[in-house]
Amino acid sequence: MATVLKRPGGELSQRPLHFFWIVDCSGSMHGDKIGTMNNAIQSTIPEMVAAAESNPNAQLFIRTLRFESTAQWITESAIPVENFAWDDLSANGGTSMGAAFDLLASELTIPPMSERALPPVLVLLSDGMPTDDYQTALNKLLRLPWGRKSVRIAISIGHDADNSILAEFTGSPELVLQANNPQALVKMIKWASTAASQVSAPASLAAKGVNPLDEAFNQPAAPLVLNMNNIPDINDNDVW
Image: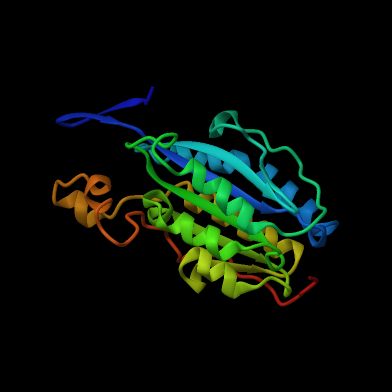
């Protein structure tokens, strides 16, 4: 049951905000890449909890999807951020990004998504090129209302990642964050997790007294606003 918050003139019920980690666990991620990623996501959980607490209109839920030669859910159902624990992932096999998009699409329909949910946040981490038909699956994902309205961020790990494919996923090259060393990867994971936990509806709609989420669902652009002004700087000490 959604939490009900008091506000002048009535009550405001929190809307579910679903956050998905979509993680490349192919063989090329073995070693420092997968280890750094595991540690970074684990360490950012308290910051996600704090960010969610400062977003009173949303109740944050987390899920993890991994892909290598196949794709599978690590968390079978959405978990409230305050109860979420990260299970370290290992790396092997190919890069079945398309299979991951297919699994993701199956969860972005109504149901299992609630009609009252905020558009979801999808964070994709990858260091290579897909080894399956990602295009058909991505097109299917982006044809779904929740896929089209989602906030999509990609973290490109190392120089071998195909940023053009990641930009197809995000819809904009600006939402492809480059990480060519462990320090940069940690910074980008922490930025993506906490910034996306605080996404908000446009103030212009709220100022008009319109429910921004109901109004925006019928519009072509995504209704959530992501602050891109505080992406961390990265150094040139490339390792990957």
